[in-house]
Length: 34
Length: 411
Image (cartoon, chains in turn green, blue):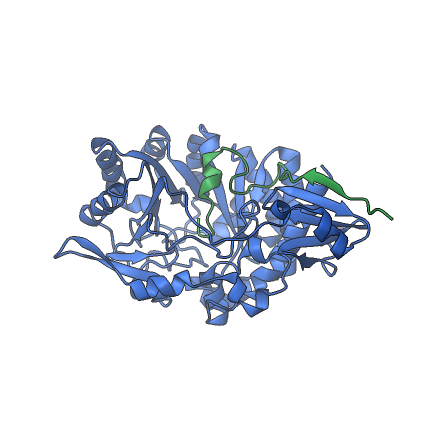
């Protein structure tokens, strides 16, 4: 029997900040220290 | 409430979580999620692309940028009870010579842009250097961007200087006045909340360049969603939480660290508050959600330089002196006689060897290439070994990464 696979784009929720999520420069400067 | 992480596992380098009756595989390589009801390993390996599974590599910096961090001083106008740097205890200040030489050193390497970060202590206690560096870059026609991490206890003139010169500002603030006045007091023990609030109001005129850094201890653990609300009130869009690391002054009060479970739970509640208010939160465990790698940080890259007031070259903002306990992160020195930076290649090579694939404890962790064994400083503080992960932060990351991937899957 064929397995059902659902593939979706992994969009980071708006409530989360992560590097390279968008072009906001301050996000590219996230480090553990600051 | 914390999610059930007991059925999460690693599959072909990728994290798999079990959520709401489905297995969700997250590929940070292809930025995709796969959802299946039944987990058939062979079938998935055959039907998903090579790109989906990806190949984790060492973390590298973008080469077009030079990264210079200047620790302007170890002095501080606050005496926060957990300060990792023991700020203010042995105040020394950096000077023009090493600061300018560091700019020269990086700009001779075919670098287009220079990113200059000012850190401390409280970096604005050596504001003269901050201003001179900005001017030096302008006079030298260096395309520079400036960042600063400040406690916000600065006057209006200094705050306006940061605003006018388009600094990206990280302001350390631990919560509303009731919290701030307990944890982050001035040298004389005074409450400085009003000054910080004035600074935030000025800097929030450019909200896209303002971020809050919040350290969580047992004093403010129950206020995490409230802290999001408080920061948002001042127009702050990004709030970076971190559970206190037991180092520096925090070592004298080890009971200040909240349990990993309560921190993770507080963070998840904060996510919901952030969503409601249209702002974003983060934690060290989430920074590299889109950047899988085998190593945690890129601090040994040749285009990065951190200079300290005692003329050391460090690989981490948290290690600020050659006398520091963990001086394996001090990789060189500025020589005042030859006016050159001298690097210790053995130390650099030792740090470059850090690789999550060599760490036994991370072998089957679902998040191994997103966490990459975590910050080596956090690890050594707890385990006395850069190759042994700090299980406290491991627990936190496992819960919050599961939560974020489950939220991604319902969009």
